[in-house]
Amino acid sequence: MNDALQPDALSIHRTLVTLDTHIDIPWPTGPDPFQDSTRKVDLPKMLRGGLTAGCFVAYVPQTTRTPGSEDAAYSRALAMLDHINRMARTQSAIPVRLAARADEIEAARRAGAIGIVPCVENGFAVGADLSRIAAFRARGAVYMTLTHNGHNALADSCTPRRDLGDRGNEHGGLSMLGKAAIAAMNRAGMLVDVAHASRDSMVQAADESRSPVVSTHSCISALCDHSRNMADWQLDVIRDVKGVIQITAVSAFLKANAKPEEVTVADFADHIDHAVKRIGIDHVGISSDFDGGGGISDWNDAGQCPNITIELVRRGYDRGALEKLWGGNFLRVMRVAEGLAG
Ligand SMILES: [Zn+2]
Image (cartoon, rainbow, N blue to C red):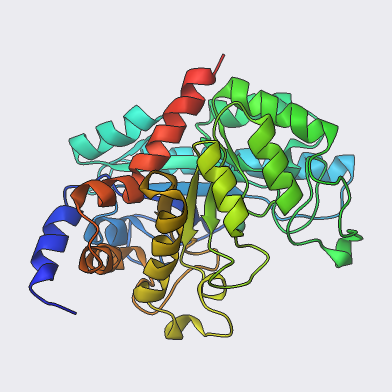
């Protein structure tokens, strides 16, 4: 690495809105997020790493589908969103604030506060009651993944759960309810997240949604063949609908048969490069999936975010490109979704 580039990369990094679009939270108990801990993300690490905002997810594991389990999933999602909102209201030496709109993420950055962005992972929590989507948005949720691992009432997952009785292709993509859920998400001003969705679900969601679909944490199939990654033709779909793929730091998605400590920011940047070459700088972004499976040798916690910028600067990405990758593109699609609300 050319050390002469590092101060420049660091100075650029410190001026950017930097948004990590997928971070898990400990649930139901965990350490104080305002103290340094063994977690990959806490507020001190975000501050050290110059990470100005993070999407914190209310994640609901997929279980057998019954009205009771769907109600329990909904209760859990609400409780987790309330917890994320309490974190965003906490008074501490590290200023934080709730950031549920693109403008609020930028305003937090200007005010020197870390933006806390609530999100939902797994449309299982919707059950058959689409009014729940507005309740999520009322708690600030900016996106919801249609699925997690396992099919649900809305859509097929890219990872069927045989243990839950999933067949390969239950709905053939989206169900009728899933299409109605996407319309409800559009009305609520929420982004439709196709991470974890099957390929049929993904392409149908891109077609159904009036706002551009996003994948908040996926990588590139051409570089690493994994069911969670996107084929080049899927990248083209993302570009065609003006959406964004947020390349993520999950080692198994970045490099086949490698341990997390064997995967580096150079591997991560290879996936960024591929996506940018294929669909352009306006449709690619950055996420960690920290505390949910993410973490590689030299981006293993939020304190190490500058290593990503240093690697990208070394590869020739300028300030404008870094601004787009580190959040500008995601803010753009948030604004489109917000503009369609109502
Ligand atoms: Zn996930």
